[in-house]
Length: 268
Image 1 (cartoon, one colour):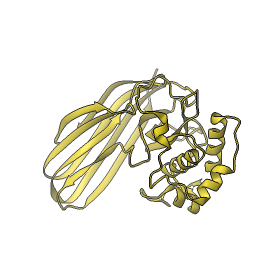
Image 2 (cartoon, one colour):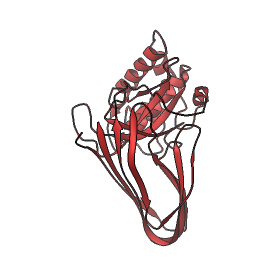
Image 3 (cartoon, one colour):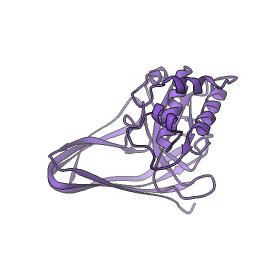
Image 4 (cartoon, one colour):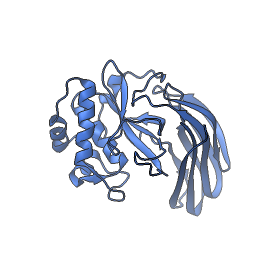
């Protein structure tokens, strides 16, 4: 599938700020399931700094914007050709050992309820267990936008019984790690749901290291493994670590945010 991605993030400030420094994880990597072409990042008034690929294989770019400024837009536009690999991440170059992803974070730390959920299923091997854990999380947390916040933890989302893709990913990561399976958070895009409904927003899911097969993606929010409708941007221990945009603002202005995402299928 050929997908055109348009992603604009606009920051507005009620008082001009002196400037900002951003770290962008906004360029997809090439691997067996996707090939990237014509990818472009533009930052209003921005100056591109150093660029490097981290140990997880993600391309990181540093950008600075000098003020005074009241509005900044980070705009991405590009093409990605995707192929269904049943969620298996093949050919992705990275140097971090999978066992590193057994480390808990504040967002993914398992409480007693998460440990009980993780222990409620059994699998014949790592892959089967990962599938069953994903299904258990899907059953335990109903998809319902607007009921959780950016800082909601996996334990809080499970207690609430509702959440969004970030909450499903965090809960699945917590359960997998509780069962000794390395797991990480993945940020990206989704063209449409299984029934064909367009998905005009950024998306997130989890990857679990299942053993000999390596990393496999699981989208508990949609009860599936990522296929050719998905574009993988980057990964981390949790949503904060895998954030496509992070940075520091210099000044006292209060910030508001507007995000627009379009994922369109192009003619083959």
